[in-house]
Length: 482
Image 1 (spheres, rainbow, N blue to C red):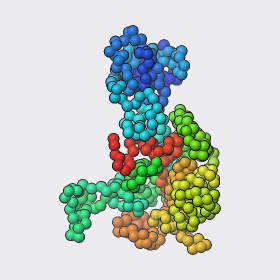
Image 2 (image 1 turned 120 degrees about the vertical axis):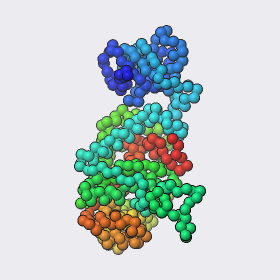
Image 3 (image 1 turned 45 degrees about the horizontal axis):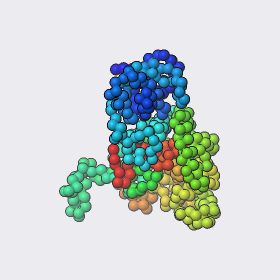
């Protein structure tokens, strides 16, 4: 096999007059002479100059946009604008043809909507080269962050018989024959004849299993796919997405908030340090996109400014009760500009409220704590009732500009009597979660954790506006293409 050089290395090289071999995909071919070649190692192309007098006409016709080629020649200093080096090719080989009449990615601007329809090819554009390089860096940074702190990485089940969130919006997993479904005497589906002999689903969270491991290892994290059968077509929701979920024994809500803030700052800084070219490209792209919007809809910060701003500022911390007071007296609420008006304590905050707190009121990331128990999950630790007798839980949500909720977490309820009473009140069957309750029976300890939707993190760091553009092959209602 011929040893090839990566274009990202050659673009920085000064080893002129040495023979090099590059392999990549043709972006453009001008005047039967200048090939713009990209191999995916960076967003930049290298110019390959061919002598059309010394190449067969049949081969020249096959150098088309999208074709894969190998080129060997001398690396020389470029006299043209836009590049410092180029390759004067002595040989060119076609590795894979591309029909120019049918190849959908032409050298012009394509809409993101169009590129979603050809998600198998959109990686070859500069935008998606940048997005998925940043995604890679963020994933690597997550693992590095937890590894440096001595966390154990746990692979929790994708197939589960429990609904961690109690939401019920889960995909069923079954091998039963839909045309001849076995039934019990009372007409219900007989899951005892199914593969697992019980009703099972795709997981919405690895949290409950993560708690079990934290009670042995002290601190663990999960990073895996999760699924939600929510019939939502918003720019913030997917049916299949990835979640990071740490669980820490002997930790309270304060510890949880600090871990989450430290993690967010660590991974953002890692991306800034290691994806400069990609983030500068995305910063320019976002600025150009902003120019097309009305003044009042434009971003207050550029992408790089926004990321730097998150690193420079401590996250604002306040209770849900304080947030409700701010929102009730806010101008958008008073003038009825919110779609969902805030009129009483206990309301579930919507994205518009979260973004107001972050983008208008505090102008920095915000951590909200101590939510009403009625709007939160059964496993969250119950606080003592407040002065007005209202029941809250030791929950936290971290809100980011442009996104709203980025992280949701809590101190977990470690007291068996409080937990079982809460499960009774919410009609959660205790016999199905006997194993979870065992952690409260045998050596229970205070512990806390949170969940970060990875795609939302990538959305924030890249400045993209639709979550379907930060995962390779998005899954959403009525779409499972590729």
